[in-house]
Image 1: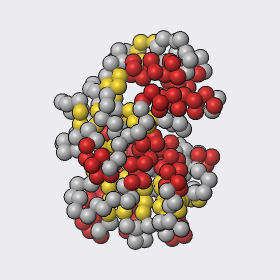
Image 2: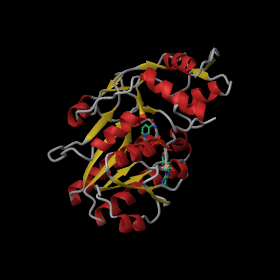
Image 3: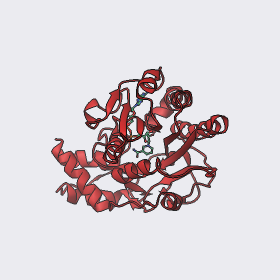
Length: 310
Ligand SMILES: NC(=O)c1ccc[n+]([C@@H]2O[C@H](COP(=O)([O-])OP(=O)(O)OC[C@H]3O[C@@H](n4cnc5c(N)ncnc54)[C@H](O)[C@@H]3O)[C@@H](O)[C@H]2O)c1
């Protein structure tokens, strides 16, 4: 048997792909998820499921499964919800993460790989963002994601727990929630396939960095295999470093969904103030990794998934 990996949030979009990737690499995998966002049907066969909440006791999973490493993806994932209820966001994303970190320390876990976010950066005066830039989160979600990076730093100082944080750009692909607030590829694909008319806000010319979920899953898995000794600041952007406008995404989706429908024009939304592209040089160097799935292919595969899921 391979090393044992506990994936929190493994019933969700990114977590289910990470679990699949790990099983394919010969790891023994267990998922810890309260199924508030993901579904038991998304947990890949071969992984056992602990239906637990990260804000409550997670001892049973750590005691019974005894993981070597933890991949921590479970979270409250909505920026809008974080603005409406910052305490709830912090309870899940900060206190829940501290609960996982505490259990990891008590149970001799070697390393935590943590799902951080581009939301840590907030509003910057540059379009391409690098890890050394000072973070000024513009949402409570961004602030909670950023806070946990610091908690992991403290845990390492105190107990030697190894960690790495991956700041994901805009992840897209099969199994993303098409009814969520973000995830424009999934939302538009679902609408176009159902004969709806998507709305593009603010002209659609802002650029975002879209990365296919399988490329993210591979980076997460590789994070378990590299040496982190001597890495003072193990925070890495996980991205393509390429900018694509919403209008370009829409055109690719129209082709992939065989639709002739033009998008509606929506107003400029407060907060949509800049293009957001993440420099990925550090991650590429550390992991000898690079995104493999070009946007056109990824969008085609996503549309195919939603067509079959009708
Ligand atoms: N999707 C993106 O583009 C993106 C970008 C940046 C960061 N992230 C981060 O990646 C991670 C995974 O996001 P996703 O897009 O797969 O979202 P998702 O909602 O599909 O997955 C989150 C999973 O966490 C579980 N969960 C939520 N609260 C929980 C709790 N209290 N206890 C146990 N499980 C709980 C949900 O049931 C779900 O299965 C999150 O930490 C998110 O903040 C995602």
